[in-house]
Length: 283
Image (cartoon, rainbow, N blue to C red; front, top):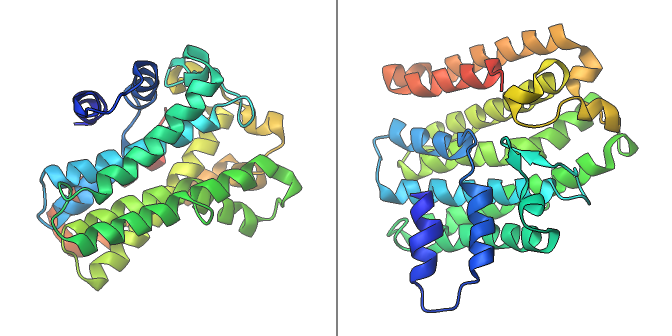
């Protein structure tokens, strides 16, 4: 569906659409990747019996936000990366100005998708999802976390501060994914609390695994450079506590995820497997 939304739908509108900008957006959003965040949203909604095009549209909106963040993170002014998902980053494949605008366009297109009645007929639900993703992606979420990450050790190397940074930069969108899926599926308050906590666990596990791979991973398998955190002097929990502690913590997070999903029985098997995949991934 993302391919269609970033192709036929954009081109079908009567307003002029710069082809180079659309090409850059498609390069950013369709060039591989795990699709973890939209997958979590879809599976969380499916846990409560909802599986339709509206959920897919919300998942695509979330992926657009994530891909915009990658485009901007890769820019020379930020993380300065040449390779993403085994391909040239957008500013290398096109140019810096186009990359900035492609990121901007992906972000705003996400709000377009969420606000559209085609995603859900319930205006209150659409408004709630839009508010949640704005907060998850903005100053108090991903963007604020990226700012703290750029400041690096100039901010703090204390564990609580590292956890706060990571919960904002990486965790906020993952937490949004599982919570949004549960909301779209009609989950009750207890369900929302459980799926929100599951998202927090998944976000922490993802960042721990990512930092671990930066230390012990293979650049070819990852499709991006390794060893960058140490080179830039960035504080991480892996650097603070070591590889063995990180691996033990990831195992504990998987166990907590299993416990949260126990009331849902076999319906939650895919989410259980996903938590384990996040913690044990090698790429």
